[in-house]
Length: 87
Image (cartoon, rainbow, N blue to C red; front, side):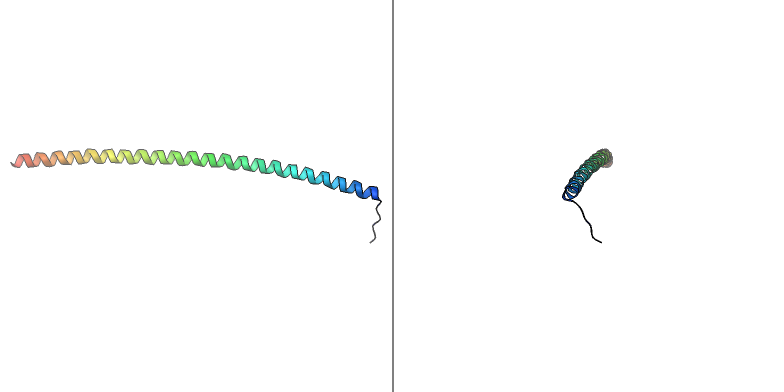
């Protein structure tokens, strides 16, 4: 196989390949941008979910603490009432 191309044909081929390369780079940049946007959106959603879970856990922790405080106060009052009743 022997190819015979003129200089102009080779120059045209190089130009066409350069244009195709530039177009493919643009496509890759666009794709990368879309992927980055999707990843950022998903990360933001995950952060919101984590924050909500933290708030819910914190709320439950505070609620349990308040219940514990009330129970402790009641136990102290009951104990003091029992001690006062014995004296």
